[in-house]
Each structure stands twice: as structure tokens, then as C-alpha cells.
Amino acid sequence: MVRSPEQNAALRVATRERIETAAVRVFARRGFAASSIKDIADEAGLSAGSIYRHYASKEALFDALLEQASSGLVAASAMLAADADPVVLVREFTRVFVTDLMNGNGEAEFFLVINQGFISDTPAGTAERLARTQRPLWDAFEAVVRRGQAAGQFDDGDPAQLTAYYFAMLSGVAGMRTVLPTAMTEAGIDLVLRLLMRKDAS
View 1 (cartoon, helix red, strand yellow):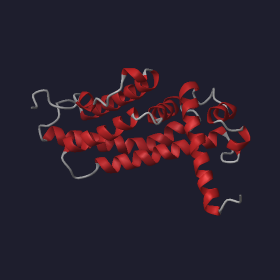
View 2 (spheres, rainbow, N blue to C red):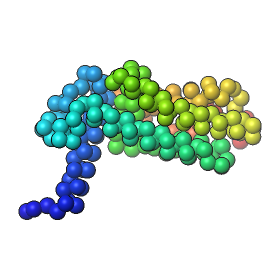
View 3 (cartoon, rainbow, N blue to C red):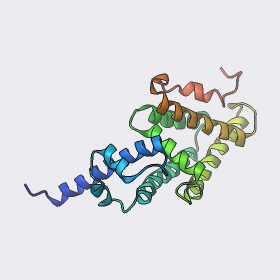
View 4 (spheres, rainbow, N blue to C red):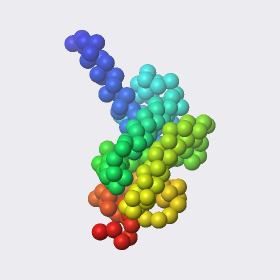
């Protein structure tokens, strides 16, 4: 049966998603440098040739994942820049982020892969690319923390440090969710927010 152009396009999209999902799993387990196209092909249940029809190299595949991460960071920055109550903004941001990590669809592994690329700068240039989109997110979050402190909603402390520890906590949640998935089965949003909330808040 001959497929229509629409069916072919849908099949290409589905195959790319399958490859990217497999790549995230492999990169999360092995790291970028130790992973190969064959490893990813085996994980995806495809031939290496099938992957090369969509991505010219392992680097090109990782580049596609970086683009997805960058788009997500830009969207998150825009969300935090909204003119809304600081507690509402931070709670919703945390809810979306942590719920994604807990959903079992590979978001925790994806987060770890991006963190690995940022820390190790592998492939070369990854850290700089991510910094360009991560910095605005941190700045937006820090600005919300400052507004929350001015309103008496968030605890005292250097907003930049609170922001750094907040995102470090999210990194830890992603790591635990990947390594010990049964240890973290609930979103625990209120636990994460305790870092910021005033201790005497009702």
C-alpha cells in the first residue's frame, strides 16, 4: 500500500521522536562521549542507517536535543516574567517542572543529559549555548524572588543564592528520579518550595 505524503511526514516525525527518546536514555546512562549511534539504534530498535537518514551524526542528534532544551528555557523565562503574584508564579513553575520530571516520559533523563552537556561542555560549545538561554531563566526567577521578598512572601537571603540552590534542588530531583525512581513517586512541590517560603508564613 502506497502511503500518502501526509502519512510519510507523520512517519518521519514519529521515527525522529523515537530516535530522540532513545538518545536521551543512552546519553543519560553513558554520557555523550561514551555513546554511539549503534547504542542509540539498539535502544530505539532501529538500524544505524535509519538514524543516519534523520541525523548526519551523533553531534547533530545532540544538537536537536539542545534546540528543544533552549526552546523550553525560553518558554519558562516568559512564564516567570508574567505580572502575577510571586508565590503563584513560583508554585506554578515548580508544579510544571517537577510534574514533568515525575511523569516517567523521559523528562528527568532529558534534564540530566542537558546538565551533563552544560557541566562537561561536551560536545564543545554546549555550555555556552545553554548559558545563553539559561541565564535569562535564572534572571527571571531571581527577579520573582526579589519581588516575593519585598512583599514579605519569601524568606530573607541573597536572591541569586536562593535561585542557585532552587535549581540545584531540581537537578537533584531529576537525578534521584532517574537513578532511584521508586524513591520519588510524588511531586513534592511543597517540599521544594520550603527553600523559598518564609518560615513564619501561614
